[in-house]
Image (cartoon, rainbow, N blue to C red; front, side, top):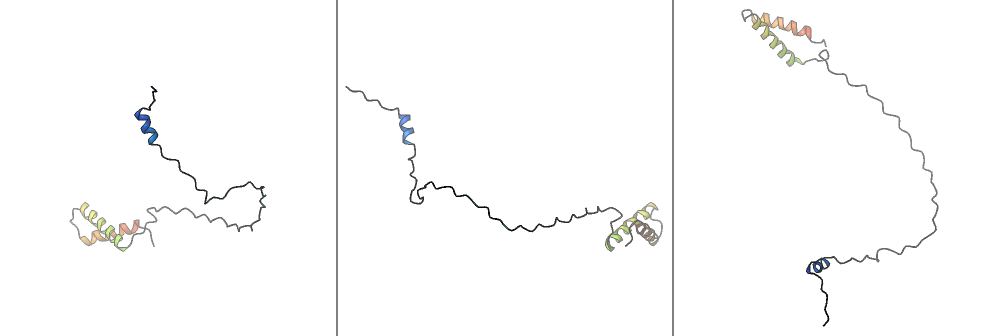
Length: 114
């Protein structure tokens, strides 16, 4: 009696799961042959024009209170608020036009001139 050796089931499954090797296509590629190295001749290109360096811009001035110039509507609102606080400080006992004129003089004195 001849005994035959069999592979365990786990080894059979591992060998069966191996993908088949793929063949490389020889139709698209031509056989490569060694040729003598040909020296490359350096071709001279015309020199490109050099651009002048970009002019550096001066840093933008930071806006300060002196540089701030409000429009008409903003100026009106500033005067209105200032007149209210002047009237409040006086207990709202005076003439509103006087408070407005005092506030207008105060705001105009603090804003930069055009």
